[in-house]
Length: 70
Image (cartoon, rainbow, N blue to C red):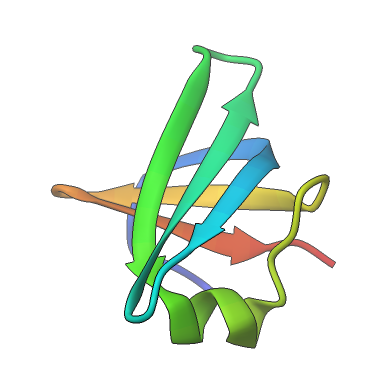
């Protein structure tokens, strides 16, 4: 998948806190520190995100979108 956002950061999932509708995914990054993303629980499950997974954070406007790396 190619993203249109220009700000992209590689990081490692530090924690996943699932809610009924939304989930909080915290990501450790080397460039700054830890960033966080609030996404739907459905997206967390679709991406099968768990601690230790490496993701690319795609930053656009106020959204931080995790894209799981192979």
